[in-house]
Image 1 (tube, rainbow, N blue to C red):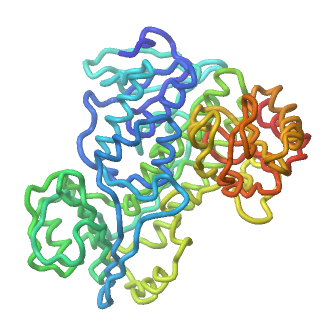
Image 2: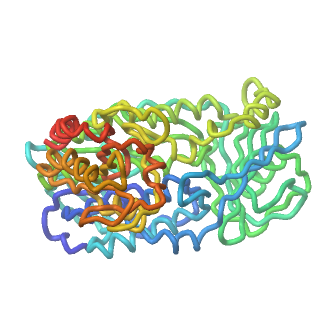
Length: 527
């Protein structure tokens, strides 16, 4: 039980998977009294969501998690090799520029949850296990939640707010009356196993592979324990069949798609059958109840986006809910959560439906698909999470840069800095709004004074720290950028004002003398 188990929390998080844990961490590190419960008596075993994309690693860094040790526990995702039937393999590096974490990580979900659980415990919050949310009722100031223990005991919690992160079967979603329409992929299924293997499967075994043939699709990925994840999307001859597949059934599917008839599996585990569907909740919030992760959107696990998208839900929601609970913003701030995150889920579901091939229906044009990948360049980086932006958010305002640098709603890159932080993420990772003021001339003290004055009024009233970025050392609050890397990365060579959100996205961008516009925006989003 947590230290707050005998009290009514300010926020109750229902579900202790990666999404619930990240939500609880974001709340707890901002001083919110939080409880987190999960129906399972023990954490769920298995590798499950094993791909952690670049932006998720950045998010973990911004949350203050021990990313270095986490990376050491996994396997680098270095390359992806595409095998289209009848065509030469296409090898593409997974590295992406502009981030401290250029490669994705392959690691079991249970290890991710262990890391998050340890960090949450360090913040004074323990996961309360064996407690199932069976009903809830909203009042004007509280949500009453009824829990049933694994031993049959009954508990009542009165929380200021409730976040449902239970997964696809969500008591919280049902209670708020949110729609949940599934769009299934009839006639196909996903068969999965973690296993060691021998045989003539083509390509470097250290790479991730994607095979497309008339029989369906197959993905493979190396895992930290020496096994490989195999997941095959193939025709489903018997939709009434229940239960997980045996090794022979998965092996047969993998052989048919890959053409490796001599392939053998050894020491297999976590055999899994999934009948695929996408679903997005009609709303993410009703009153004092909110949804995150698979409770808000369940997408086919064929693009390794479900957990990553859920973590970004939690990162988006956590600081907003904390600001409301702590009285630093009105509940209107929470309206931006659904406005920003639901379109992301809808687009992901649409892309999955459009691109998934499971051996049913017209065979995709493999040569055309391969040619598109050959010339994809930066356009093929959406899965990394790095290009994600919120330009149409109610929290985004100001002017887009004429050339280079992030505009309103865009992600801020991590850049080396001096004075107050060794890099920008260390400054942003403190978890508050931040103003960055770039003088027109970084070496002129008078220009720095003008930038500080323009930034100070609205930010000061709202308690937002201001950091003037100069070319040399200055007073407290100054960031030193002798190399000009920070100025160049943000496209601020002519001077600029930035209001950066607690999750590392630009809320406002303007010229260095746009202090009055910044003042109005700060007042609008934080009042």
